[in-house]
Length: 291
Image 1: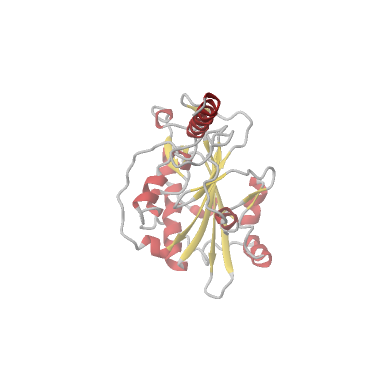
Image 2: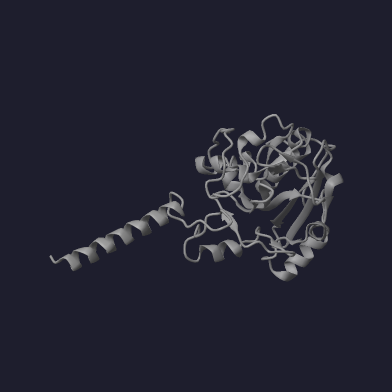
């Protein structure tokens, strides 16, 4: 082999090695490319992203429809890397998921492996005075060891007042499971609300503390029509009467600047979101419901 040909081959090998190194440095262990915002791109199979965006529980943000949505097995979320909390978390809860073997809580909070940029860490919450408040609760994710693990990703968590987390917020989580058994399926979207430009923060990574939290539910009645209801809770101890925090989804959307359940048929959406019946459609009572 002459020297010129040998040098050309060496050059090609070096370039190939450099390309491999670049790909390794800028991708995660699964080979998915990492974007400039630190969130893994290419997390969906071909056509899967379109399917995700057409799902009823996925909201549309009116002010700035964020393009980066992360999908886990049990829920989807939009992550706010500036605030280190989710913008929203959404999922459909099926009755069959509640009736499929129960995995015990892991209580092991970890960073989300699909976020490679700025995010919260468990140490940010230590000594902060706030609970690690689940958006998609662990009790809704017991149907799989993977979904249980995902529910403890810190992308699914916000700093939450302990009395709210263990009180009214927990009561509403139980109510959702009750409704999933009644309707066979409930669509859920929830998340934090920030009312001021400079919110409080905790931890070394400046995890922002929400002023309040929202949750919206949608279910299909037996006659094929839909029922919807929204809630807002301040991030503090609340009375256990959930109806005091209930509102129509139209009212909730006006406060959030979001279009919730926007993939639902327009006429069905307009009808469902304009009214709410906490006692008839949702059977909410003051007493605490059992799981």
